[in-house]
Length: 201
Image 1: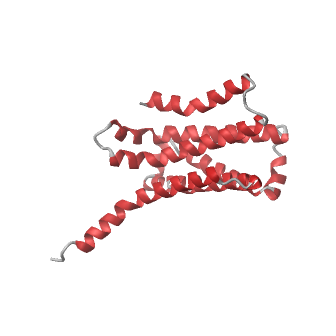
Image 2: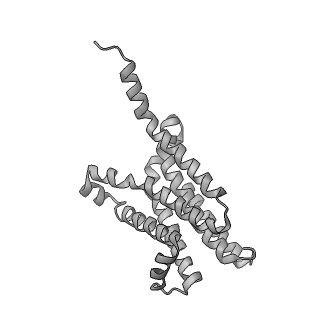
Image 3: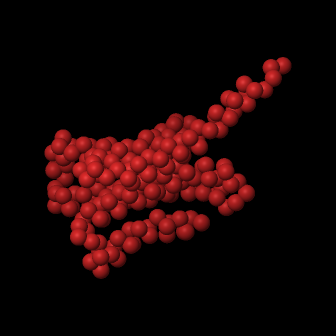
């Protein structure tokens, strides 16, 4: 399953590379590459959030094995985000890192995107067994940041699309994120409702 997930994760990058080689990225190839990389980052992150819910809902299937690949898939998302940043630097500023500071003040979507990447860097740096042992229970608390990261990513995407007044895809991601959050919170609601419904001895 791990190999299949890796193939699924790397597939869009291979597709973009092939389309670039064939000059088949449309009238604005740079924007297509940037959007494709950013979109795949969000797709993988949403899948990472969905893994526990899928494993709980279908425990008798192979889906319960998904949870053990969460860290690996999270690192794939981080890799896409880093390539997304490098593509932005190359296309927008010819790899001049200092130019980012000007964009931080003039372009809000860049500010939100960098905040998102910084948070992802923190999670990627602690996605190893040593960090899990060192942080203990705090590791799980820290990695709950993944929910905020996805939301920041959606905001980053929406701000970028604001120039064209096209929020269709950001809204789709927001609906998915909201649904996954409700699925995560639902078990606690059920426990509380059952406790209230159970007779007091």
